[in-house]
Image 1 (spheres, rainbow, N blue to C red):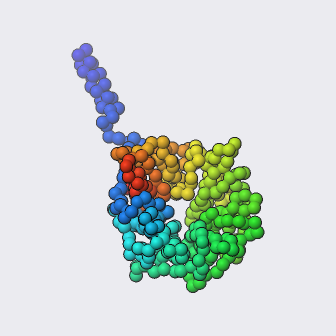
Image 2 (cartoon, helix red, strand yellow):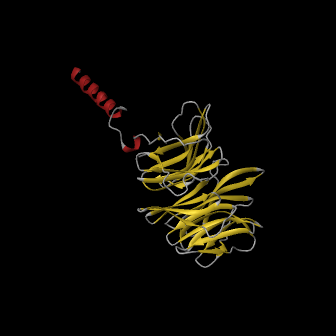
Image 3 (tube, rainbow, N blue to C red):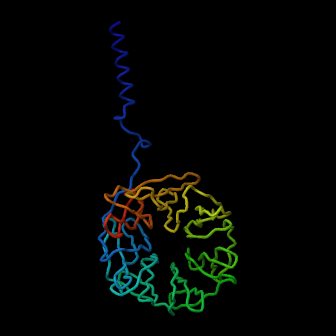
Length: 356
């Protein structure tokens, strides 16, 4: 009898050990990666505005924007080398009035739109250093810029109205748009013969597409009474549109995805989140920075099909406003760049990373 009791007790202990939390964890029970803060050298003046963040891979990312100096705006550029952020002041016009806009990777080069004292140009950084390609004319509004191997576009306005300027590597041409287009809010491209723009027209918002010959209405069935924040094109042919639809006087975020055959529209629980900072994450889901309900932490949304989840950045002491404004995928990690306002100070720069 005592021998039987001993066997039973041994079996109970063995089962408990197998079920114990201290037992070897399976991959499914491993802790999910969390956001961590990355140091960013402070801007020379504050407050600051972040324009864009783009990454080529885990060892190279660029963040652009401008500082608000006493006598106007000053361009601001930061580089991520895989381990730390550093300030770059070596580009032409770095100390002059102006601002930096969208960052694009063209082959082995980095291209950045630069408003240099009101004059538009494209900064180009190669292994030999920085150079600049001036625009053929001055615009009083530089709305957006995009570049791919073999082509670049700048859209804006002058005193005669809408302007679409295209660069083919040797010179500039001015392109016309379909009748009824009043304003172009943004532009992006997959190749030199496949560019998309989102427009305000006499009949509402519309998506235009350049096919190498002309700009045409792409006939995208946008939600009624809506606008477009961004269009994200991917090498696979997939396209994602983000914007806001106004229903009963209230905006709600919508996402439209083209799978190569048809458009699918969804309304994830994102409130009225502005979707310009949306990226495809390393996990295949869509990620967006959004307005946080916690003053001391940033907030991010992950949209994967019909499922939307949220995560928060690290707690920041005495923070009253943490705003990640742009996201980029760097290998297996996500990188964010934005601003943080600490109680008693003006907004300065912040960066966070998920994974890595």
